Length: 126
Picture (cartoon, rainbow, N blue to C red):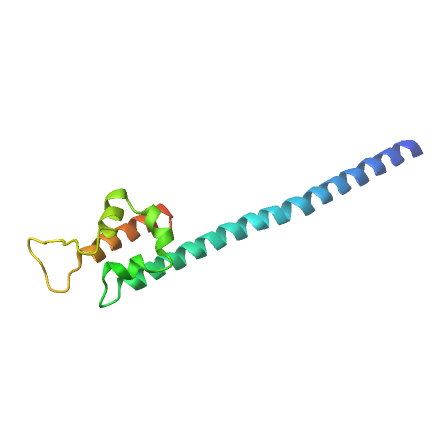
C-alpha cells in the first residue's frame, strides 16, 4: 500500500463518519419526537377517561352533567350512534325501566359501558 491508498482510505472513512453522524443527529430527535408524541396522546386519553369516570361517578349524576362537561365534545363522536342519540335526547324524554332498582341510572350505566369500550379501542387497558 502506498501513500495514495492511505489517503483514499482516510477520506472514505472520514466521509462515512461524517455521513453517519449527520444521519444519526437527524434520526435520533425524530424518533424521540415520535415517542414523546405517543406518550402525550396516551396521557391525554388517560385524563379524558378519568374525567368521564369522575363525572359518571358523581352520586347525584344525571346526563346533563356529562352533556355540559367540556370533555363531552371529545366523547360525543366516539359514542355509538344509538348511545349518542339516547344521551342527547330532549330533556323531557323519559326512560321507563321494567324493574327499576334504587339508585340505578340507565344513562350512567350506558355511558360507563361506552367509556369502557373506548378504553379498549384506545388500548388503555392491557
